Image (cartoon, rainbow, N blue to C red):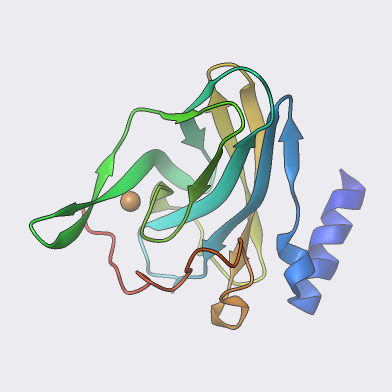
Length: 169
Ligand SMILES: [Cu+2]
């Protein structure tokens, strides 16, 4: 645990792509690049993004997310409705065998309500994911500032398509 923390501190100090590359494997699930966008201290809500790959033979479902830095967290998706982009809560997300589910701005995300601490660039916070099969999985989410834009995730999806999208509930 101590080694992990030192790694995070060094990564944050360098603000390099390396600092985002802390993957997590839980059974058949491989979780990559958990990150949040840095927000002003007054922001009441935030969002976390990541990708989950199922390298096993059996389907799993992400059922819930929880973090001590927020009053509560929900699984959300974006839907196009009447020409508008809207968010709505979903109960769970299936991660089928051999598939990768991406949580990205403008797509699925973990919505954080009643933030108890600001999302400061370079910091990180813990999130517990609950899966139907894999059970509870603890991950660490990196908070990225503007200068880190485009470094998380893969090049095949845009990270800035919906960055002006507000989270209103
Ligand atoms: Cu949301």
